[in-house]
Image (cartoon, rainbow, N blue to C red; front, top):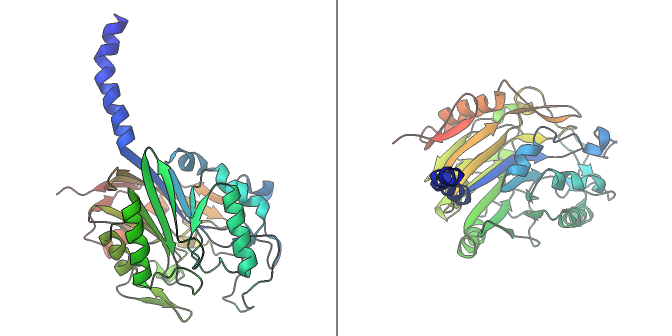
Length: 344
């Protein structure tokens, strides 16, 4: 009798097993800056162990967890920034690096406008900390251009671009194309991260054409994302405006134009939409094609970190922005953050 029941359910078990192997789950977040010792000490309780409490299970269950490290992991050095109202330097103690590994981060972008806050001292310290935790990274010009991670027999290539002079610049499409093309040749799945766009609560909509902020060219992000997909990238995700923006499925590939802030408990505005902290999961097949996804809405409070939001504010915001700014997307979002392909 037991043998008969086992044989009856064996085809279903085999089918489910194959489906699991054929699907890759990717979790993505925006800016991470766990606390700073500059210009004064602003650090969370319990050495940051509670910051990612509500996100930990989601990040750990993903095949790959990705984010943007907004700032440095270092214990010294001199700030490279000025003292004006738009000048901030982020220096998180090196003792906080394990927090990133404990919750499952596999790759972090360094291609942002805070990676050089403490010069080469800060860059080298950050790279050393990430290596010690086994976390891959890229994004600083002349240093690490890309990374490769293997999962379930697949090679996944990752790269990161920013708008600052010391980063691999996303405004330089020749460089972007070269790096993406090389990863497409060498790996099975390619994921591109970018830090770009103007900043602030009024910058949640995705404009046509280039954006500028504080005198800097912050990129033409629609062009960049589509360029990467056209060159073979399978996922493109952005951050930089400190607010969420639209998501799009373009030619079967997933694009997030800004995931906003995720864990920035100090020295970053968290009021209104600036406090929305989405954690986005997407499922892709072994060829990189988008299958479905989920926006896990979270909210931030000063000194606390992201906490689950049953009101789904981030998902509803991203749904509205996506319908307005990328109406031709091949995917739709419901009120609770489920992302599905539109019926043809």
